[in-house]
Each structure stands twice: as structure tokens, then as C-alpha cells.
Amino acid sequence: MNLPWFKRIGIFFIPTAIIGWLILLGGLAYAVYVFIDIDSRSHSVSDTLINFVFNLLIIGAVYSLIAYLTIRSAKT
Amino acid sequence: MENFEDILTKMTRPEVTHLKHQDMLANAITKAKDKSVINWWWLSIPLYLIATLLMKTIFMPQSTLRLNIHDFTSREIYSSVLFFLVLPILFIVINFISIRNIYFLSGSPKSISFLRTAWFNVLMVIFSILILIIYSL
Image (cartoon, rainbow over all chains, first blue to last red; front, side):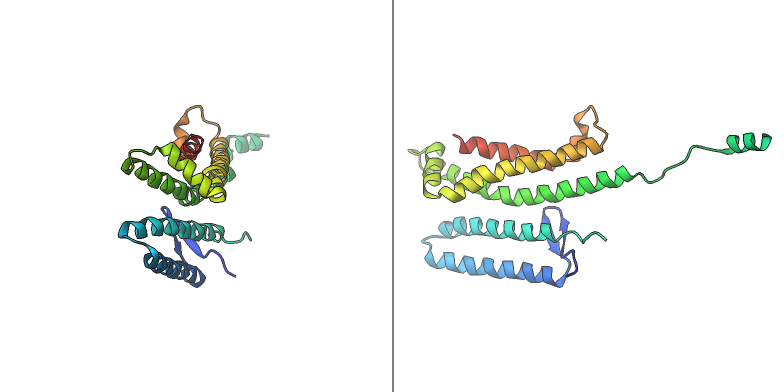
């Protein structure tokens, strides 16, 4: 597959290829699913947000790891 | 022989407009920045946990940060070791290697002004040490 899938702007990795966009959309979809799941089990707004932010950071960290590993094109 | 002298006088020092070590330095700086960004994302998890435990300490006057961290580490043994011990140590090593590479490729400058190039890596080392200190409380 053709690399790179992402480019770095500041502390964010922006997709540059279709597969990069698919990974980003997958991450966002999972984040929404996690939010709904936490919200259904939590007792207050702060309870939802505290647990959701933790999960969001983990999703962001995994996404950035994937982006970091695929940011460079193979040496020719 | 005169011709040779003319050639010698016309000769100038060879000009190398593009040095290989400049490419190496630029590459090292780019890699160090990419690494420091990923370190930031992974360090934000333990930093967030510390922030939540700190808020818990503030809003529950009878508890202390030390007590809350001990409570958390006893409940989440593997994740606490990963986030508060393994990741900070790993990131300290990675960032030291990146800073060292930039230092040597910059020509080992006497002043620490070269750290302006790698300030985010230095910040990540400071955060990692801070996490380790709080974890060892």
C-alpha cells in the first residue's frame, strides 16, 4: 500500500489518503459508540465526561500511534 | 608552467552548497518532533489520571493524593504500571536519544541554545519525570 497515510500538523495527524480517512472515521465512530455506552451506565454528566475523556485519550493515542507508523513513505 | 599557475590562481575552494549532515539534522529534528507528538498523546493519559485524582483529593478533604494513587494502583495494577512506570521510562529514553542525536548533528554546541529546536522533547522528559515522582509518592 502507498504510504504516507497521514501528515502531522502541530500535535495532530491529518489523513492524506483514503485509508487514513477510514481510520479516522473508524476512530470517531468508536468514540461515539463509547460515549453512548458510558452515558447509558453513568449517573451524572460529570461521571459521563470523566470516563469518556479517558477513553477518548486512549483512542487518540492509538490513532496517533497508527498515524506515526504510517507517516513516512518507504525509502527508495 | 605559467599556464598551470594561471589555473591555480583561478582555482577557488570547492563549494559544497548542500551538506549531507544538514539533511541528517533536518531528518533528526523531524523524527524527534514526530516522536514527541506521539509521546504527548500517550503521556496525556497518565497526566489526565493524575488530574482526576488531584480533583478527587481537593473535593474530598479527608483523602490525600498519595492515598488516592495507592487506591488506584491497587485496583488497576497492570494499567497503572503501564501508564505510570513503563511509558514514562520508555519516553525518557526515547527523548534522550532524540535530543542526543540533534546535539551531535548540530556539532555539539557548548550552549544549550540548541534545545530550542528540541524543546518539546525536553518538555516530554519533564512530564515523564513528574509522573514517575508522583507515582513513587
